[in-house]
Structure formats: structure tokens, C-alpha cells
Length: 422
Image (cartoon, rainbow, N blue to C red; front, side):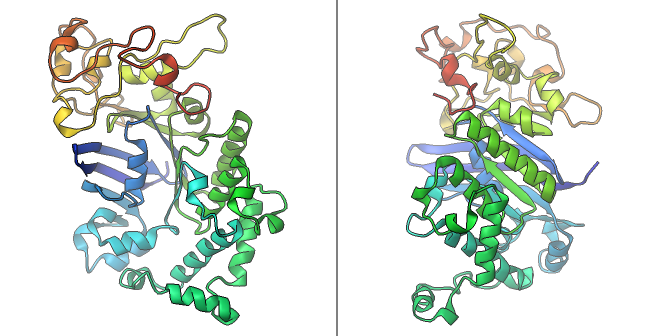
């Protein structure tokens, strides 16, 4: 079994807004092994994307990673930081939350990279696609020419606006080298862009949605990262292009051996791509384990509810069994001090009125569930009456009606056709 390349322990991210504190990520823990594909799945608003942004240190104000450890395995980095930050080093692992922001920034691109949800908003419309990918290549080449310990103490704004203007007047002062431009074309060819030399000189608006997504993957691969975070990599693409993008990611992962973290609401993507899965709800990982653990031997009723929302292609005339109710508010003063899923759970018991803790389902502890059903059977604790959460005054929503009033319809609950939830 391969070693862990990433260990996330007790990660919490908050947004401090005018309405109050939003607990977007709540005490999340999981491990990702070297060379595997790990998936995070859940409804919209469950905290998946914020988890990904927290890993690559891209949470913007008013958001903040407030607690937790992010252990990244890199023997060279650990040796560089051992003397100055001994508390953040454990063997070959470095707690990236225990070192200065400059160190985390220096790892972005070479160690961690991210594919964002919307490629159209992620590219600069005034620059050619090839220029932007070449710039990413150049940044990583320049960074890799200096030791990480030196980079962490160096101002990252060496290339100023004045340098950019000067580069237009003096070709010898150009920031992007010919080697980086050639590498950009190679990357476009690697991700299946036809006529990559010509396409490199085109602007983002001249690319189709599928091609722009491929170009974003090329840009993410510019620094040959160890860990690639793919946040909804098939969003807004038609089914055929989705399949092509997923095949591309799978081929690149096998070819390069990189570790991939896929964030999605689409269970089909999870089943097709992932080795292990974490199911997320209301900012928490409520169940995690292997693909077989989650799809066949799941324990948490929310996991079962997600799977029940997927149509069975082998049965004729069958109906969906969506998760009733709504995703809860993540405002701190509106979150009940109990299991967050209890008001939507068909197996809610009195024991669910207390905050659950992770429980091991199997002997090796790889299959974990954040639910009392990990220890007891349904009925061991008195079941709650159906109308309990209609009258308890804790802000919980009731079950959805057939027409969706007061909750989500089957189409809104979870994506089942590979597209966005409607």
C-alpha cells in the first residue's frame, strides 16, 4: 500500500460575514495516498469547494482557515524547515498550516495545483491561451531554480508592471522564454487540443467550453504538481465532452503518477474515477472509505440517500427516491447542537440529538462514519416522531413535499445526469 502524500486533520474554515459566522468546513479529516484518486462528493453548499480551496491556501477574505493541520509529505521541504519550524515537521511530513504563508505560496504550482469550476472566468480574456500557459510554465521554472527555503523569504512581486512594459520594448527583457512557449504548446497537445501551435495563439473566447477546460488542465499541469485538486472538472459540459475530460484526467494521472483530489456532486464521476471517497454534508465528512465501502456497504443514511437519488438504468418505470428537506444553514447561530442531518434522516433517533463523532466500521479503520449507526442499530435508541423537527424550534426544515415546497425536488437534490443540479 502506498504512503499518504496528504493528511488532513481537523480542518475548519470560517467566513466572517455581516450575517454572522459561516462554518463552511467543520473539523474535516481524511488522508490521500500517493498516486490515488480521492473523491469528495455531496450536495451543493456542503463545503466541498471550500475544502479544496483550503488545501491550496486560496480562501479569500472574509474567509479564513481557523484550525487544523495539513501534513504534506516532502522530505526535501521537511529538511529545509526542520531547524526553523520544528513543531511543523514530523519525519518527512510538514504541517503546511504551521509554516508561514510564503512557504505555502511557494508550493502552489509545483506541489499543489487546482482546476477551477469555471474556466471562462479563470483565463484572462486579453491574453492568448498559449501566453497564459507559458507564463505558468515560466513561473514554475524560475521558482524551481531557487531552493524552497530561499523562495519562502523572497518577495514574489519581483516581476513588476514596469518589467512588463519594458518587455514589450526590449525582447531581451521578456519574461516568458521561448522554452516556456514551446512547453505550453506541448501541454496543449498533451491534453488533446488539435493544432496546438495555432491554438496557442488564440484567445479564450475562441475556444469551446470543452477545449477551454482542457486548456485549464494544461495550465494546472504546467508545474508538474504532486497533488492536483479538480473542482467540478466537468461542470457545464455536455455528456460527451464530460467523458472525454474524465478520460483525459484518468490517462494523465496514470501517465504522471500524480495524486488527484476530485470534488464533485456527480456520483457517476466518483464511480468512474475514484479509489476512495469522502461524503460531505454541512461542512463535515460524514462517511469515507473505499469505493465499495461507500457504494455497497454504506452506513450513513445521507450516503444511502444520495445513491437513492440516482436513477436505475436497468429498471423500467422506476422512480427516484430523493433526500427530503433542505441543506441546513451553515451560519453558526443557526446550526443545531446535534447531528446536522437528523431533521432529514429517515432513521433519526433520540441518540441523534447529540453531536456524533467518527466511528470505525471496519477493523482497519479505513471505513469511517460520522453517525451513531456506526455503533448501534436503528431502533436501539427510541426513534424520533416524524413531526419532531417541525416543532422543536431549532430552525430545522421539515420534509419536502411532492411538489418541492419546503424542500428540494428530486432534480434539485442531486445531479443524476452529469450536469449541474437544477
